[in-house]
Image (cartoon, rainbow, N blue to C red; front, top):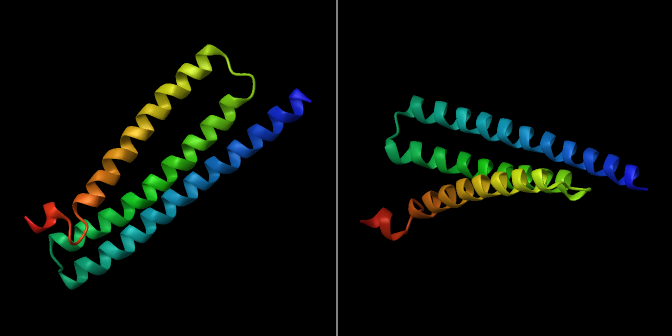
Length: 116
């Protein structure tokens, strides 16, 4: 039973990690297309910032899926070493997500920092 659960957890984590790669690749391709179009139209810095914000949203989504994959891998018979690694990874990814989301909110149209 435990071996079946390990196989299921490993497979699930692998699927989530594949989704992470697909999300990042899609976000990067979308950013490249939008940035190329904006460069051809010679739009300003705010336009580039919008492309960055859209890409950052894809990165945040990918970080959430990656954290989910790590949690699934650690959930089956974890050792203290596994738990420690998960805690470090979760802290780093949560910090990245927090700062990316804060940057996105700061530069959304109508925000206080944008108007200043």
